Each structure stands twice: as structure tokens, then as C-alpha cells.
Length: 211
Image 1 (cartoon, rainbow, N blue to C red):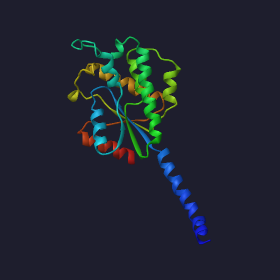
Image 2: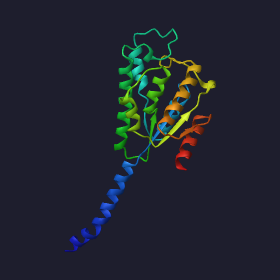
Image 3: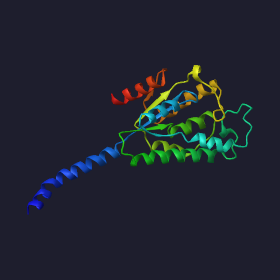
Image 4: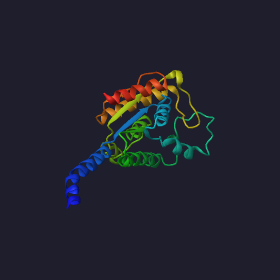
């Protein structure tokens, strides 16, 4: 009888504690770190990972490498979606990958979860390249809303192109403008990250989240 009484009085506590844990998991903050190419955002993501924050890596570089594996990159090319056989399918694969990241964050038992670029980035790049998109793309953005968006502005002093980054600095500035327009279109308040060291930028992001 004593055991039953113990379980009876303990049961509400167990349920409350279990529910609290579920609540924490379901309320993981999804935080986007975005910006035009060469702004230092991936360096920030890598620094956050080293500090044991959960981060989803950018997936476009893997898609870019696959799309350009037989291409001579000695010539200036603005972006792989300029010359892939099916640009819409390339962007569909990209947006599906980012939606998958968004959904996978549901199962993460962490308070914060960072994303190297978000779903709306796909539309910003499509706008930049004057590519049409339908409701599939806009619905992907409106149906999957992040909690916070941090934007790293163009920074000429650190900009460089490589085998997976084809844009010139001037194009990077234009992409930045499209990113601002698209995120605002979906109702986001954009937090711009100031220039600084990687540590300073990470501190700014973390301090902004905690406010």
C-alpha cells in the first residue's frame, strides 16, 4: 500500500517533468545565419559548432561541386544554376534539403539550433538570376518560419572567390539586397551582424538571442 501511495503522489511530478522536457524539445529556437557570398557566415557557423552549438551546414556547396565537376572554372561564372541542365530542379533539390533541415530540428533536444542559410535564401538567389518560381517555393518559405534571422553584410576586405563561389564582389552586394527583400517579404525582422572578428560576431549573435 505504501508503494502505491508513493507512486500516486509522485505521478504528477513525473508527468510535469516529462511534459517540460517535451516542451523544451518542441521549442528549440531555429536561427538562420545568412548573407551574400564571402561574408564570413560559414566561419561563424564553424565557430559555433566548435562551441558545441547544434548547426546545420550549408548544402549548396555539395550540390555545386556535383554540378560543376566537369566544368572548367578558370572562366568567370556567376553561379552553377546559370549552367546546370535543369536550374529549377537544382533549386528544388536545394529547397527540399533546407526544408528537411528545418523539420529535422524538431527532434533536437537543444535550446538553440543554427542554420547556415535558410529556405528564403533560395528565392533570393532565384530573384537575383531572374528565375521564375511558383507556389511550391513560396509555400516552403511561409510554411517553415525561423525564430531569428541574422544577416552578415558584404565585407570587401575579406571577400574572395573559389571553386565553389563564383560571384564577384559586386554580385555579392546585389545578392545581399535580394536577401533583405525576400526575408522582409516573409515578415522577418533581420538582425545585421557588424564587422569584427569571428569571436566578436559570435558574441554579438549569442548576446542578441539572450536579450
